[in-house]
Structure formats: C-alpha cells, structure tokens
Image 1 (cartoon, rainbow, N blue to C red):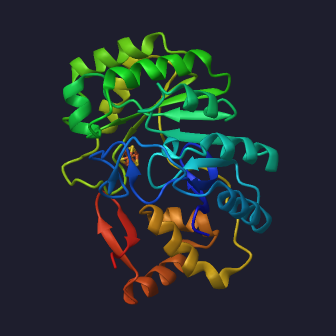
Image 2 (image 1 turned 60 degrees about the vertical axis):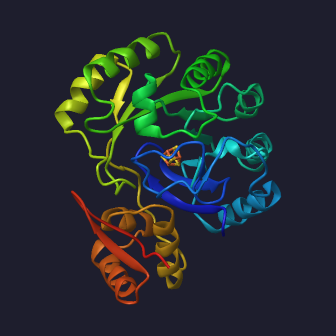
Length: 308
Ligand code: SF4
C-alpha cells in the first residue's frame, strides 16, 4: 500500500482512511509547523503525480480488509490539489463507497476553476488559512514563488460561495508568528462573511519541521476562538471508537507505515491498533532497538521513523 494508509485516528474526523495523491512533501508551501519535514518539491504545477487507477485499486483492497472508517480523507504527504487527477479520484471514490470523502488542502490553488469543479463532489473540504497579511503568510507558510496570498484568499471566497458540501476552515496558530492582535483582527475580517460551517483552531502539537514553531497556550487559543465567533472550535484530542486489527502479525509493519506518515504518541498508536498501550510499548521498544523508529521529546513523547 503506497498511496493509502490507516485508518488513522484523526482529531477531527474520527477514523480516517488516508489517500495520498502526491509524492512525499510535494507542496506549494513549506510551512514552519509541517510535521512531515521540509518540502522537497516546492511547486504549483499540477500533474498526475500518482496514478489514479492505482489509488482506487488500493482503496478498494483496504476497504475489504478493514472495518469501516468514518471518512476517506484525501490528504497525506503534500498538497493533494496538485494532482491533476483529483476530480477523478473523488468522483470514483464516491462510486466505490458510500463513505463520506473529505479533502484537506492548504487552499493555495482554490482560485483555479478546474480545482473548484473537481472538489464539488467531495462531502467535506477543509482548506487552511493561517495568515491574511503577506509578511505573516510568507513567514508561516513559506509559499513557492508563484503563490499569491491575494489570489488564495479570493479563491477561497469564490469556492466557499459555490461549494454545496460542508466547508471547515483550519487555522494553525504558531506562537509569535500569526497570533498577534493585528493578524487576528485581519483574519476575523476576512472570515466574517465566508460561508463556512466551522472555523477550526489548531496549534503545533506534533514535532514541527522548525523547532522555533511553538504552540500557543490553551488560554490564548480560547481568547482567539472567542474573537473569531461562535462557529469556531479548538481542535481537540481524538475521541473515536477503538477497534483491533485482524492480522496482528503485521502490526509492526503497520506502525512503521503510520509513523512514516506522521509522528504519533503511544496513545495514538494504541488507538490505531486497538492494542493496550502496554503492548504497543513492547512493539515500539523493539522497533526502536532495531533502529526503525526514534522517540522525539516535546511536550509529549512522539515516535517517528528513523531517517535511512
Ligand atoms: S503543513 Fe501542509 S501545506 Fe504546509 S508544508 Fe506541510 S503539507 Fe504543505
């Protein structure tokens, strides 16, 4: 399985079967808080980076093997709207299953009418909007040269006006970067008339690519949430149901695959596997000893796949 992962526990979507449409870190941004590492292909060029037919075949196989996830989520290791086959993937997923399809995007290309049309078949779209002033945008998201903030905001507004599915906006807050009064006032003004169902505030909880990308305190998140209005929520801990895997012999492979996508805590791995945390500790201990996985110490201990 190289394009499909999980189901993984998502703090917003419950159990989410992830579909990855681009090679690792192919993105129009290089965000300072990215949990995946530095962007290696910094681009706005759309092409079929990953073949659509192979993706759909993998999803079909995965759905036969695994209990029903809450969402099929198009996201993964970069910006999914860069895949020129995005529309076909969403439409074919909707034919394949009745599960809801969500798309997580950084929103930089939403001005593109083709992308707006391709996303129309999704049940839920979650674009990011971390900054609305150019200097903050450039410091937080480090866009590639062809991305214009003005165009991204206009694209988000156009898309929001026409999209018939559910729309949530995500704001990732980074201490000392986009949490100042002026930026929050400007964000509030942009979001005021945007017809989104929810505004979701997030902060840096997983190891970021830049160690200077630090989280906000809970109280500050709450103050900002209050300023953004009553459709705003702070993204909380995962609270999904737990189920186990049928084939536990493959658990270490599953853990390595999961951690290759994003660092996780023991608790998150335990939710994913349906195992008791103590058992997970054993598997992780073995993987660390064998040199596949390493711990990273932040506010909590995360585990990630050791660089080759
Ligand atoms: S956080 Fe998302 S948008 Fe930002 S660099 Fe990472 S993959 Fe790209």
